Length: 328
Image 1: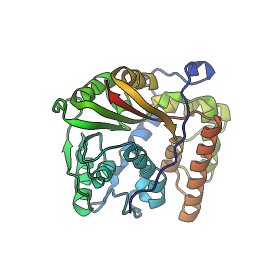
Image 2: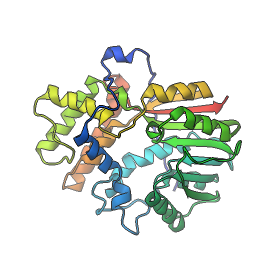
Image 3: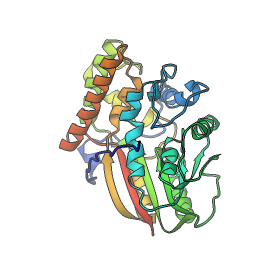
Image 4: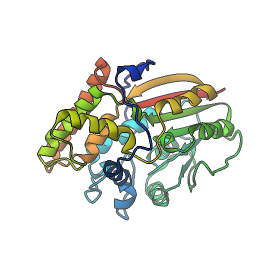
């Protein structure tokens, strides 16, 4: 069955956010403890995936051995990876397109695009991820579109000029050393009027209201021994400050800000649509460890719905944006 439609939250980005309390942190500031934790967390799929693991959004099941990954529970994937896939596949118009999926990871989005009849090349520099994507392709029905995977670093990968109808960056542009050069390459390999799709995290958009909400969710879970991330101080002020620092400095050594991504996107492509979407709850669900699956599912759903409500009322800052543009 096709993946059902994902409701969108349309929020307008307003300049001057820094003056409203958004944290601006030196990217090279040391935050070794939380950085090490984040690095482990986002490498868990490659490290923990069993030999028979497949990342097929239409054949979801629990993978209990993947304790550090959202794939451990099918309902967590339904709340996270599946909506992201719907955002991207729902933004693709046309038939029999040639699509490049940069940083394809497990290949779950590439697989859905091939099921729509598109020819897809998924690139990822992680060998283990390419193994998972390839195995999923062999076991699952990939549709009428041609689906291929290649282990490659996009910064070093050449590509054929004017070869693709669409290029997708899904949660990867923030981590590339030079986002403008990456987007220049995407522009070069796109056909005339080809489209760019960028679903990306803007970590530096964190503000104190958002951090305070996250603290209110995380700290009670931690007290119950239901949360696996580094300890938050009992002092709410210190806890909020720590969450704000983690948002930028605690994820990886190099990270691109919202402005460093959106500015070259707007210079190199004609914007068609721009929207903000749910993200913060991903971190909570990733680290939440509730022994009772029914309680965990109910709480996970509640946190997701609460973020949707708070974003809709403007109470907290969004962090995940979708940019769709056409080659200028």
